[in-house]
Length: 100
Picture 1: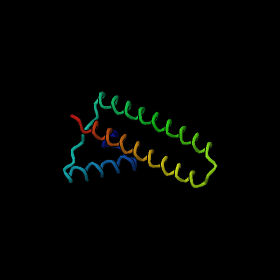
Picture 2: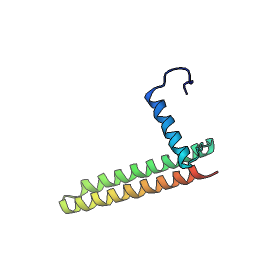
Picture 3: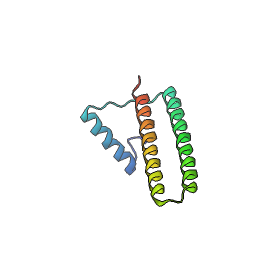
Picture 4: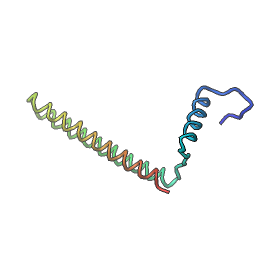
């Protein structure tokens, strides 16, 4: 971080305002440990692979089908699967970040 003697960037000023706002709201700053970072990276890699697998399967099914109604159903299922995987990933990461 920059010292207090020189001019501050817009980013530094914004971060100061956010920290002050958090302090006023009673939100304490927590740092993520190296173990948590490793676990979070593992979760992200796992779900990235799951999403890639889902995309490959989706593309395969789309190529196999010529029916427009089936294409819509496949697209809806794919979106639902991606949203579910994203939600699961975010929940696991949030849980890891809150661990002490």
